[in-house]
Amino acid sequence: MNLEELRARYGEVFELTAGDITVYCVRPSRAAFMRYVARVQDRQKLLAACEDLVRDCAVHPTGQELEQLFERWPGATLTLAVKLAELAGAAEEARIKAL
Image 1 (tube, rainbow, N blue to C red):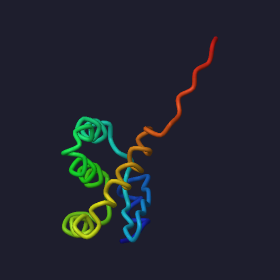
Image 2 (image 1 turned 90 degrees about the vertical axis):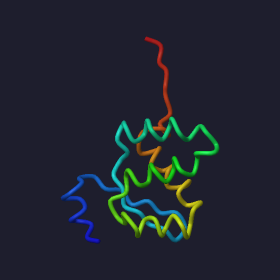
Image 3 (image 1 turned 180 degrees about the horizontal axis):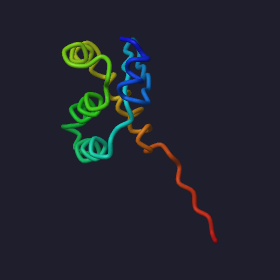
Image 4 (image 1 turned 30 degrees about the horizontal axis):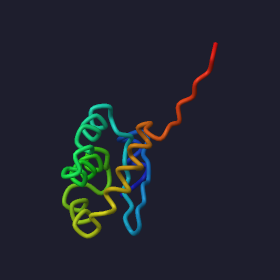
């Protein structure tokens, strides 16, 4: 994996780390984030929703290597998905101002 190559190919790239896992991702698209929000509210689909968001955004590792990380550290996908949601703006605090 070459970070410069990833930047050249994808533009803005973010390093997300959860425990021993490091995944390089792009910011979630609107469509990917909407799919995540729709599925994450169903507790039975929570982990699958998190894995799908990470898959949608991961640029390295991908494919089988990413799946092996999911198998070895399934809980890390929750942490990574929360960080990706923050990149999508979910952590932004809204402000109100009287005019």
